[in-house]
Image 1 (tube, rainbow, N blue to C red):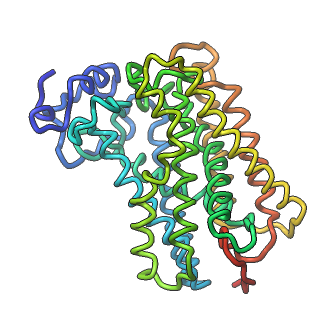
Image 2 (tube, rainbow, N blue to C red):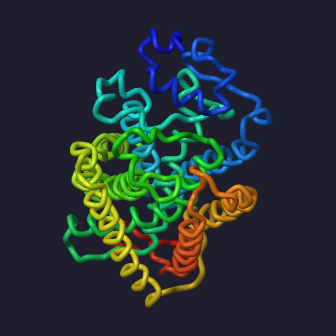
Length: 380
């Protein structure tokens, strides 16, 4: 399908091949798509669950922004707002090369990776659903807010605090994110390009590279940068977090490079047995899980009265909403097929996420600065 997208450098033959496999894009030739964005009837989408997942992620991003503004006004703590802003910068740095690899001259190296279906609101020639862009501030802020309650404390070593906090944020982000990640391909929310080397080893419908790089390594690198840059000193104003937030967002992909070595090896040496890089990726996930479990055990030992905040409230709402989506999708999952998610893996993620939230609601009442000194908070 030769299109204006291809002529403008925004499309590629492989993108069109994958797009034709998504029913939602069949009636929307690329040449007819608005170059800036689109708005579609939410009741006319390919999957009835699409508007629901959009609502879940968009409301999470809005709630995270409200959390940041409230923390600034109530506690004179601009760090949560800085986290939200950094996540926006992070997605703007990370996503364009993945959506338009040929424009950035990296298609031969990374491939198309995935193609998204049409949702209610999207940007740039039907390519980037709005909810995906807002997924980052929603999910990263959620994981950060939860771990912030744990009061990670490793003495005066900021580097060690950043590493521990990063591992915890990566592990927490994983258990929440994979509940969504396993459902998307099954419901035709997006399609993976299985000819790309890094998409080869999979758990059910999800490439292990996504389960580790996107769900663990990137959020861990983000939290590492946030502790090292954003939290180097108290931030009392919105202006004080602007430059650090930009720094965190820009540096996150660079800081994640060591953690992505197993997947990079898989991509650079396609003749190498998949098991070698797969073991490396799974080991990274396991290491972050062990570190997070240790910190969570410490929280259990020092628990206080029940307290609710953005992390726990949105976390519970997210699990309830996703449970509803999985119940609707359950017959399809049970019937099987090449694109269904792993129900056992998702069930484990649900249980772990619920445990994390239950423990976090009983975390001590002091205000937390991940990896930094704590201070007593006067509750409003």
